Length: 315
Image (cartoon, rainbow, N blue to C red; front, side, top):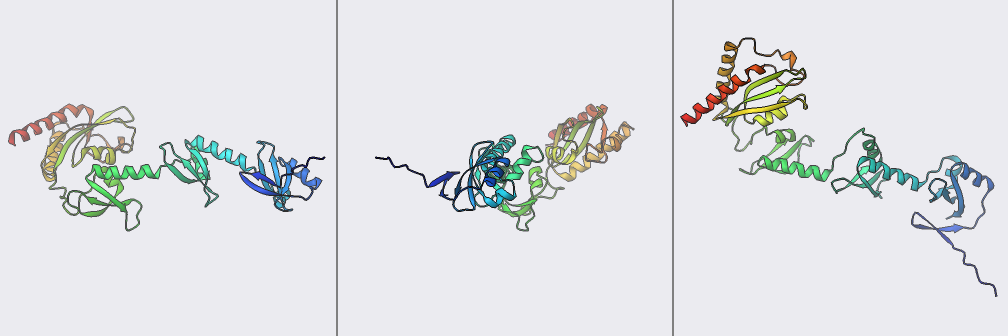
């Protein structure tokens, strides 16, 4: 008695079963497939489709007859291998294609969050042509920035300016739009309870910079937030060595301005020629004047120490 032979009627490709079509194969189809890097294994679905094995990776692919004869078929497994390699080179992990758009995929970022990004964008990141930020981490950063200044991030700008956000002042509950750069630097005031710069507490300060030429220069000035002024306003060259040497608390911006003007007049009178030519620092420091040669650093620090002592004695 002959044992019946079980002939499968489906073929699985990329986890999907396809019905096998019983039609024969033309010799020129087989030859064309080989020239293009595939071996035809069977006809599937209908007379217009093949199951073809890739010469490079051995994976099965569903290929249309028209594509085989008129174009270069692509192996989906090889393509996905390339996507995974691009993701790894960019520092991400490829998870899966986006079912809604073939140009996108889902990736796991180094921070552990899952991101939906264009395949081509990940390739550009891998090549070093651009960078990528995690939206979740970026949102957490913006919340923390606001909290450090005493504000609560509410949401995007109602005027749809991407540089602005809506914030609420924790102290008084006032809501206003603020440029994110200003929230980072602190160079703004609350429209509900804020003081004008002239009435708000301020600081006299001394900062030292080392120019690209190696020359050391010192700046005397006043600001409500000297650290912010140094990091967000004055520096054109972020790699330039610099330091906030000292700061002296003054009761108001108006009083700080008056003291600063007297100090500049005193320095120019006692040390003529010690102001530095702006041409020597304009590419590194975002200011036009009131920069002195580093030799005046101990003298300026002495003046500020004297002012601080006088203020404490008068308090």
